Length: 298
Image 1 (cartoon, rainbow, N blue to C red):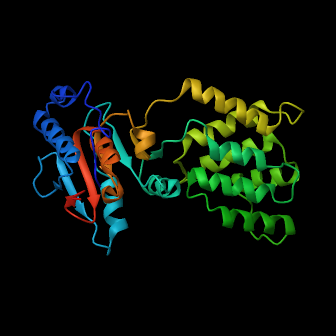
Image 2 (cartoon, helix red, strand yellow):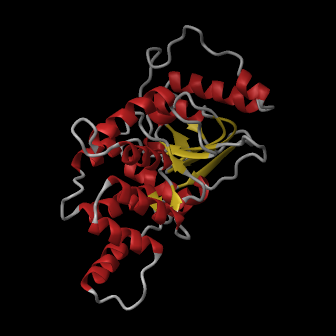
Image 3 (cartoon, one colour):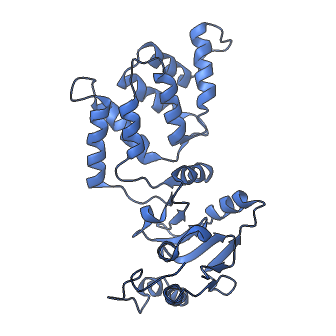
Protein backbone atom coordinates (compact mmCIF):
# COMPACT_ATOMS: atom_id res chain seq x y z
CA UNK A 1 0.00 0.00 0.00
CA UNK A 2 1.62 3.24 -1.10
CA UNK A 3 1.37 6.05 1.40
CA UNK A 4 2.19 9.74 1.26
CA UNK A 5 2.44 12.80 3.42
CA UNK A 6 -1.22 13.39 2.59
CA UNK A 7 -2.10 10.25 4.55
CA UNK A 8 -0.32 11.49 7.67
CA UNK A 9 -0.25 15.34 7.66
CA UNK A 10 3.09 16.67 8.90
CA UNK A 11 1.71 19.76 10.67
CA UNK A 12 1.94 19.20 14.40
CA UNK A 13 3.80 15.91 13.91
CA UNK A 14 4.26 13.98 17.14
CA UNK A 15 7.92 13.78 18.12
CA UNK A 16 7.65 12.86 21.79
CA UNK A 17 5.31 9.97 22.71
CA UNK A 18 3.99 11.55 25.91
CA UNK A 19 1.08 9.14 26.39
CA UNK A 20 3.47 6.18 26.39
CA UNK A 21 6.04 8.00 28.51
CA UNK A 22 3.34 8.72 31.07
CA UNK A 23 2.42 5.03 31.02
CA UNK A 24 6.05 4.06 31.63
CA UNK A 25 6.35 2.67 28.08
CA UNK A 26 8.62 5.16 26.32
CA UNK A 27 10.37 2.47 24.25
CA UNK A 28 7.03 1.22 22.96
CA UNK A 29 5.99 4.78 22.08
CA UNK A 30 9.19 5.48 20.18
CA UNK A 31 8.78 2.21 18.27
CA UNK A 32 5.33 3.40 17.20
CA UNK A 33 6.87 6.65 15.98
CA UNK A 34 9.27 4.56 13.88
CA UNK A 35 6.28 2.59 12.58
CA UNK A 36 4.76 5.87 11.45
CA UNK A 37 7.96 6.79 9.61
CA UNK A 38 8.06 3.39 7.92
CA UNK A 39 4.47 3.64 6.79
CA UNK A 40 5.11 7.09 5.35
CA UNK A 41 8.06 5.65 3.40
CA UNK A 42 6.18 2.50 2.30
CA UNK A 43 8.60 0.33 4.28
CA UNK A 44 7.64 -3.00 5.83
CA UNK A 45 6.98 -3.39 9.53
CA UNK A 46 8.77 -6.49 10.80
CA UNK A 47 6.68 -8.05 13.56
CA UNK A 48 9.48 -10.43 14.54
CA UNK A 49 11.51 -7.49 15.86
CA UNK A 50 9.33 -5.54 18.26
CA UNK A 51 9.34 -4.24 21.84
CA UNK A 52 8.20 -6.55 24.61
CA UNK A 53 4.84 -4.75 24.67
CA UNK A 54 4.00 -6.03 21.16
CA UNK A 55 2.81 -9.57 20.40
CA UNK A 56 2.22 -11.13 17.00
CA UNK A 57 -0.39 -13.89 16.56
CA UNK A 58 0.15 -15.84 13.35
CA UNK A 59 -3.02 -16.64 11.39
CA UNK A 60 -2.07 -19.59 9.21
CA UNK A 61 -5.58 -20.56 8.14
CA UNK A 62 -5.96 -23.57 10.43
CA UNK A 63 -7.29 -22.32 13.77
CA UNK A 64 -7.53 -18.61 13.08
CA UNK A 65 -10.79 -18.05 14.98
CA UNK A 66 -9.47 -19.85 18.05
CA UNK A 67 -6.31 -17.74 18.01
CA UNK A 68 -8.28 -14.52 17.53
CA UNK A 69 -10.63 -15.43 20.38
CA UNK A 70 -7.64 -16.13 22.61
CA UNK A 71 -6.13 -12.77 21.63
CA UNK A 72 -9.44 -11.00 22.33
CA UNK A 73 -9.26 -12.32 25.89
CA UNK A 74 -5.90 -10.70 26.56
CA UNK A 75 -5.96 -9.52 30.16
CA UNK A 76 -6.31 -5.85 30.94
CA UNK A 77 -3.79 -4.21 33.23
CA UNK A 78 -4.51 -4.92 36.91
CA UNK A 79 -5.76 -1.39 37.59
CA UNK A 80 -9.20 -0.06 38.43
CA UNK A 81 -9.55 1.59 35.03
CA UNK A 82 -7.71 -1.01 32.93
CA UNK A 83 -9.32 -1.31 29.49
CA UNK A 84 -8.96 -3.39 26.34
CA UNK A 85 -9.90 -2.30 22.82
CA UNK A 86 -10.48 -5.04 20.26
CA UNK A 87 -10.42 -3.90 16.65
CA UNK A 88 -12.25 -6.16 14.20
CA UNK A 89 -13.01 -6.15 10.50
CA UNK A 90 -14.52 -2.77 9.58
CA UNK A 91 -16.44 -4.24 6.63
CA UNK A 92 -18.23 -6.78 8.83
CA UNK A 93 -20.00 -5.34 11.89
CA UNK A 94 -21.55 -8.78 12.42
CA UNK A 95 -18.11 -10.34 12.92
CA UNK A 96 -17.39 -7.70 15.58
CA UNK A 97 -20.66 -8.58 17.36
CA UNK A 98 -19.91 -12.29 17.13
CA UNK A 99 -16.51 -11.73 18.75
CA UNK A 100 -18.08 -9.63 21.51
CA UNK A 101 -20.66 -12.34 22.18
CA UNK A 102 -17.92 -14.98 22.46
CA UNK A 103 -15.56 -12.92 24.62
CA UNK A 104 -16.41 -12.75 28.34
CA UNK A 105 -17.10 -9.20 29.44
CA UNK A 106 -16.84 -7.73 25.94
CA UNK A 107 -19.36 -5.33 24.43
CA UNK A 108 -19.61 -3.75 21.01
CA UNK A 109 -19.05 -0.08 20.32
CA UNK A 110 -22.10 1.09 18.36
CA UNK A 111 -22.52 3.81 15.76
CA UNK A 112 -23.97 6.92 17.41
CA UNK A 113 -26.91 6.76 14.99
CA UNK A 114 -27.92 3.33 16.36
CA UNK A 115 -28.91 2.41 12.82
CA UNK A 116 -29.70 -1.24 13.55
CA UNK A 117 -32.05 -0.40 16.39
CA UNK A 118 -33.85 2.42 14.55
CA UNK A 119 -34.34 0.14 11.52
CA UNK A 120 -35.72 -2.58 13.81
CA UNK A 121 -38.14 -0.11 15.44
CA UNK A 122 -39.32 1.09 12.04
CA UNK A 123 -40.05 -2.47 10.84
CA UNK A 124 -41.53 -3.75 14.08
CA UNK A 125 -45.32 -3.95 14.23
CA UNK A 126 -46.79 -5.03 17.57
CA UNK A 127 -50.05 -6.53 16.18
CA UNK A 128 -48.35 -8.46 13.36
CA UNK A 129 -48.24 -12.26 13.42
CA UNK A 130 -44.43 -12.29 13.36
CA UNK A 131 -43.97 -9.73 16.18
CA UNK A 132 -42.84 -12.30 18.74
CA UNK A 133 -40.30 -14.08 16.50
CA UNK A 134 -38.87 -10.67 15.54
CA UNK A 135 -38.62 -9.59 19.19
CA UNK A 136 -37.00 -12.88 20.22
CA UNK A 137 -34.52 -12.62 17.35
CA UNK A 138 -33.71 -9.03 18.35
CA UNK A 139 -33.04 -10.23 21.91
CA UNK A 140 -30.66 -12.84 20.52
CA UNK A 141 -28.85 -10.14 18.56
CA UNK A 142 -28.09 -8.04 21.65
CA UNK A 143 -27.71 -10.73 24.33
CA UNK A 144 -25.79 -14.01 24.39
CA UNK A 145 -27.29 -17.45 25.02
CA UNK A 146 -30.88 -16.35 24.38
CA UNK A 147 -31.72 -19.38 22.26
CA UNK A 148 -34.33 -17.50 20.24
CA UNK A 149 -35.36 -20.46 18.00
CA UNK A 150 -35.91 -22.70 21.03
CA UNK A 151 -37.90 -19.98 22.79
CA UNK A 152 -40.08 -19.48 19.72
CA UNK A 153 -40.74 -23.22 19.47
CA UNK A 154 -41.43 -23.51 23.19
CA UNK A 155 -44.01 -20.71 23.11
CA UNK A 156 -45.63 -22.39 20.13
CA UNK A 157 -46.02 -25.53 22.25
CA UNK A 158 -47.51 -23.51 25.10
CA UNK A 159 -49.97 -21.87 22.76
CA UNK A 160 -50.92 -25.21 21.24
CA UNK A 161 -51.32 -26.89 24.63
CA UNK A 162 -48.70 -29.55 23.85
CA UNK A 163 -46.05 -28.41 26.37
CA UNK A 164 -45.37 -31.01 29.06
CA UNK A 165 -43.51 -28.90 31.63
CA UNK A 166 -44.50 -25.67 33.31
CA UNK A 167 -43.29 -22.48 31.64
CA UNK A 168 -40.35 -20.50 33.00
CA UNK A 169 -40.66 -16.82 33.83
CA UNK A 170 -39.25 -15.95 30.41
CA UNK A 171 -41.72 -18.26 28.70
CA UNK A 172 -44.57 -16.76 30.72
CA UNK A 173 -43.49 -13.29 29.63
CA UNK A 174 -43.26 -14.45 26.02
CA UNK A 175 -46.73 -16.00 26.22
CA UNK A 176 -48.05 -12.77 27.75
CA UNK A 177 -46.58 -10.74 24.89
CA UNK A 178 -48.17 -13.02 22.31
CA UNK A 179 -51.53 -12.68 24.09
CA UNK A 180 -51.29 -8.90 24.42
CA UNK A 181 -48.48 -7.44 22.28
CA UNK A 182 -47.64 -4.00 23.64
CA UNK A 183 -44.59 -1.91 24.51
CA UNK A 184 -45.01 -2.89 28.17
CA UNK A 185 -45.22 -6.64 27.54
CA UNK A 186 -42.29 -6.40 25.10
CA UNK A 187 -40.16 -4.65 27.75
CA UNK A 188 -41.17 -7.26 30.34
CA UNK A 189 -40.07 -10.04 28.02
CA UNK A 190 -36.65 -8.47 27.42
CA UNK A 191 -36.20 -8.01 31.17
CA UNK A 192 -36.99 -11.67 31.86
CA UNK A 193 -34.65 -12.86 29.10
CA UNK A 194 -31.87 -10.72 30.58
CA UNK A 195 -32.40 -12.41 33.96
CA UNK A 196 -31.82 -15.92 32.57
CA UNK A 197 -28.69 -17.74 33.70
CA UNK A 198 -25.88 -17.50 31.15
CA UNK A 199 -27.44 -14.55 29.36
CA UNK A 200 -25.20 -11.51 28.97
CA UNK A 201 -25.62 -8.21 27.15
CA UNK A 202 -22.95 -7.84 24.47
CA UNK A 203 -24.72 -4.90 22.77
CA UNK A 204 -25.88 -3.00 25.87
CA UNK A 205 -26.20 0.35 24.08
CA UNK A 206 -28.78 -1.10 21.68
CA UNK A 207 -30.70 -2.93 24.40
CA UNK A 208 -30.66 0.16 26.62
CA UNK A 209 -32.03 2.28 23.76
CA UNK A 210 -34.75 -0.28 23.07
CA UNK A 211 -35.86 -0.40 26.69
CA UNK A 212 -36.03 3.40 26.87
CA UNK A 213 -38.07 3.59 23.66
CA UNK A 214 -40.51 0.90 24.83
CA UNK A 215 -41.07 2.76 28.09
CA UNK A 216 -41.58 6.11 26.37
CA UNK A 217 -43.91 5.14 23.51
CA UNK A 218 -47.66 4.58 23.76
CA UNK A 219 -48.52 3.80 20.13
CA UNK A 220 -50.33 7.08 19.48
CA UNK A 221 -49.57 9.24 16.47
CA UNK A 222 -46.25 10.98 17.03
CA UNK A 223 -45.31 8.61 19.83
CA UNK A 224 -44.95 5.25 18.14
CA UNK A 225 -42.12 2.85 18.90
CA UNK A 226 -40.28 4.24 15.89
CA UNK A 227 -40.83 7.85 17.00
CA UNK A 228 -39.44 7.03 20.43
CA UNK A 229 -36.47 5.23 18.86
CA UNK A 230 -35.59 8.33 16.84
CA UNK A 231 -35.74 10.49 19.97
CA UNK A 232 -33.49 8.07 21.84
CA UNK A 233 -31.04 8.10 18.93
CA UNK A 234 -30.78 11.90 19.07
CA UNK A 235 -30.26 11.81 22.82
CA UNK A 236 -27.56 9.16 22.36
CA UNK A 237 -25.71 11.41 19.92
CA UNK A 238 -25.60 14.19 22.49
CA UNK A 239 -24.91 12.22 25.65
CA UNK A 240 -22.83 9.20 24.60
CA UNK A 241 -21.67 6.57 27.08
CA UNK A 242 -18.39 5.72 28.82
CA UNK A 243 -16.08 3.15 27.30
CA UNK A 244 -16.53 -0.38 28.61
CA UNK A 245 -13.71 -2.40 30.17
CA UNK A 246 -13.47 -4.55 27.03
CA UNK A 247 -14.85 -3.06 23.82
CA UNK A 248 -15.06 -4.42 20.27
CA UNK A 249 -15.38 -2.21 17.21
CA UNK A 250 -13.85 -1.03 13.96
CA UNK A 251 -10.94 1.36 13.53
CA UNK A 252 -13.39 4.14 12.67
CA UNK A 253 -15.53 3.57 15.77
CA UNK A 254 -12.51 3.35 18.08
CA UNK A 255 -10.53 6.22 16.55
CA UNK A 256 -9.71 8.74 19.24
CA UNK A 257 -10.39 6.26 22.04
CA UNK A 258 -7.56 5.09 24.27
CA UNK A 259 -6.95 2.02 26.40
CA UNK A 260 -4.08 0.18 28.05
CA UNK A 261 -4.32 -2.80 25.70
CA UNK A 262 -5.23 -2.95 22.01
CA UNK A 263 -5.91 -6.16 20.07
CA UNK A 264 -6.12 -6.04 16.26
CA UNK A 265 -7.87 -9.16 14.97
CA UNK A 266 -7.04 -8.85 11.25
CA UNK A 267 -4.13 -6.46 10.97
CA UNK A 268 -3.27 -7.71 7.48
CA UNK A 269 -6.55 -6.29 6.10
CA UNK A 270 -5.88 -2.71 7.21
CA UNK A 271 -4.42 -0.03 4.99
CA UNK A 272 -1.53 2.11 6.24
CA UNK A 273 -3.67 4.84 7.78
CA UNK A 274 -6.06 2.50 9.59
CA UNK A 275 -3.22 0.27 10.73
CA UNK A 276 -1.41 3.17 12.37
CA UNK A 277 -4.59 4.43 14.03
CA UNK A 278 -5.27 0.93 15.37
CA UNK A 279 -1.72 0.32 16.57
CA UNK A 280 -1.70 3.55 18.59
CA UNK A 281 -4.89 2.88 20.59
CA UNK A 282 -3.08 1.00 23.38
CA UNK A 283 -0.60 2.68 25.71
CA UNK A 284 0.86 -0.43 27.36
CA UNK A 285 0.32 -3.46 25.13
CA UNK A 286 -0.43 -4.29 21.49
CA UNK A 287 -1.50 -7.65 20.06
CA UNK A 288 -1.57 -8.01 16.27
CA UNK A 289 -3.21 -10.99 14.58
CA UNK A 290 -2.14 -11.31 10.94
CA UNK A 291 -1.29 -13.73 8.16
CA UNK A 292 2.26 -12.40 7.85
CA UNK A 293 5.00 -11.06 10.08
CA UNK A 294 5.71 -8.38 7.49
CA UNK A 295 3.11 -5.62 7.42
CA UNK A 296 2.44 -3.42 4.39
CA UNK A 297 5.67 -4.12 2.54
CA UNK A 298 4.48 -2.68 -0.73
